[in-house]
Image: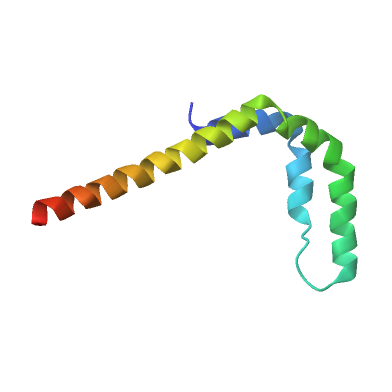
Length: 87
């Protein structure tokens, strides 16, 4: 199961929380919009905190981080191999 499917499956039970957070923004100079953002954030904080502190999210982030490191390592190894072949 790829990462996007895992995230969609895990978020299915709490779909209204990310949607509500997506409707408001903390950006901009409008103080009333920022207050609305804070109210929505506080209203959904407990549910989001409870879900995103589960170990599966930490594993997912670590796998993503390690995958990025492997991709960069492979890329630079290929570059160094090309440089050695040229000289």
